[in-house]
Each structure stands twice: as C-alpha cells, then as structure tokens.
Length: 416
Image 1 (cartoon, helix red, strand yellow):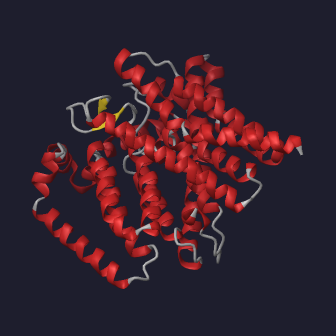
Image 2 (cartoon, one colour; image 1 turned 60 degrees about the vertical axis):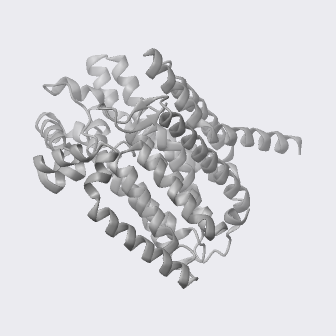
Image 3 (cartoon, helix red, strand yellow; image 1 turned 90 degrees about the horizontal axis):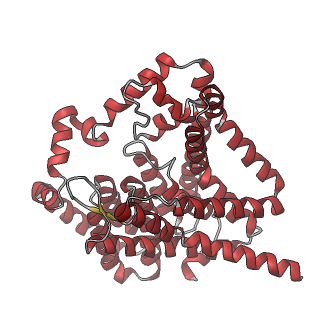
C-alpha cells in the first residue's frame, strides 16, 4: 500500500513538471536573447523529464520501453554511421537531439496512458492540468513580448515570440492549446465564448505569423459549429458573424495585414512564386535544393536512415533544413523514420476523424480539426514533427484523443 502511495506521488510530481515545461523554455530563451548564452536549461529539463517518463514506463510496461529504445536506435542509425565515418561528436549529439525531439510526443503519450493505469478520469485530469497550465504560460510569455520583453518574430521587428526563441514552434504549440482552451470554454459557457475567442485571436496577432493567425481564426469560428451544436440559434448567429467578419477582412485585407507588419512579406512571396510561394514563404526552393543533394549524393543506406547533420558536409552552402517537416526528417534520419512518424501522426488524425462521427464525446470534432490543421502546418511552416517546444503538449493532446473511446459517453474532462 505504501509502495503504491509513493509511486502515485512520484507520478503526480512528474505530471506537474510536464505542465511547467514552457516556463523553462522561457528561461532558456531569456539567457539566449539577453546574454547570448545558451545554458541548455530547457534541454536539461526535458532530458530529465524524458528519463523520468521512461523510468515509469519501464516499471509499468517494459515492452513499451523496449519498443521506444529500439525505435531510438533505429532512428539514429544514419547519424551513427556518419559519426563512425567522420568522428564529429557535436554532430552526433545534435542528431540524437533531433531523434529524441521527434519521438517526444510518442514518449509523452505512452507515459500518460501507462502511468495512469488506463484510469479514464485520472488521465483526463492529468491532460487538463498539462494543457491548461501550458496555455496560461504561453499567454504570459506573449504578454511579456507585447510589453517589449523578449524577441521579435521577424528580423524587421514585426510580431513577438516573447522569451521563447522559435516562432514556428510557438505558433504550433499555441494552436493546440488555443483549440483545447476554446473548446472547453464553449462547452462550459457559450455566452462568454466570443470574448475568449477574441482574446485568443489577439494573441495570435501578437505572434504575427500567418499560420498562427489563420489557424486561430479558423478554430475560433469553427468550434461553435462542430462542437455541441444543438442550439441552432447560436450556430446561425456564429455563422452570420463569421460571414460578416470574412466580408470585412476581404475588403480590408491590405490595411489589416499592413497593420501587423506582414503584408509586404506576403506580397513579396506571392510575386516571386505565386500561391505556392505565399503558402510556403519561399521554402519550395529550399525543398528542391535539399532533395537534389540528398538524392544525388546519398547511398541507399543514407536514403533509408538519413545523413544526420553530416548532410552539411555534402551541401555546398552547409545548409541542412528546408523547414518542411517531411523533407527535414527525410534528410536527417531517413525514409524509414519518416514513414514511421508520418504514420503515427496520420493515424491519430484518422482516429480523431472516426471519433468525430462515431462518438458522443463533445470534444472529438474539435480534436479532429486541431490535428488536421497541425498536419497542414507541419508541411507549410515546419518545425512541428521535430519540435522540442511542442512535443510534450502534442503528446498530452494525443493522449486525450487516445482515451476517447468510440461511443464513449464520458465528458468528465469538460465537467471537472
């Protein structure tokens, strides 16, 4: 009995540590921005969390631990071979970091599900704690950015990511947390939803990436239409409001985009490469360039298991990433890991889609929308599947999806 109590207490403390990881991203960013020193605070914190999560998994379900370790080894084969060839320790450490960050959502998902012994109510409370605290910390971070503390999203001073250094990673994290938060607010109190949705859009404007702004607007408008939409008057009202806002935006698109500082940037991308350039912000050229050297210089083994950072040794300008997740994973850790990771994320989208149609859980349609938007953004702006900032949040969100059973009547999370 005492052993079970101590075990539960340890797990509760790990869950609390998971909820506050954004704080350490901010602390790490603070030293980088203001002192130009990367003290690896966030890295050490997350590595500690990963070790603790794997330790709990090893106690509860050794088969899962074995599978995770085998996956880490498989994903590291390409970088390991290049380490043996060139002996570059810093490159290999970098590549291990990419592998671990790529698998962080899977590790977090496995930990949350296994550590709570499939106790539905406990799992929901854990997920709720992680996602809501993370949301409030992201809002606090952006508030600091708004009052001038932190860094700009773009080099021209437009937007802010506060003390979190990576803009695209923050945008994707913000998308998940905003979607979850707004879904809860809609289910708890529909009358206050408009206020909260405007609040979230305001913070998306502060980040000033087109992906965060567009995704947040889509989420804010769509949630009332797909989540608990039994009140037709409310739905028609929201739909009318959405149409009115859309018309207003269409006729005032230039001053709106100019006011947040991204109009010139978007027009330049459109003039250079059309719609594709606008969507990818010029990344299509990087994709062609990176894939050319990947296929021309690579052996079959490198195609299957990647180059790792050693790819820079083959590239004439020492470039590595294309900022499109599929391409970045392909180059760094190969086709086999790419198919594995893509299957994992697509599987959760497919499962959430089934839930949206075949479960009575009111959050299921919103979860499906959020995952769909994430899949799109990962191939437009990148830094999602390989992100350390989003990993824990995404893993917790996937745990939420994994524990909504088909024809499940439980809405304990919303009502708690």
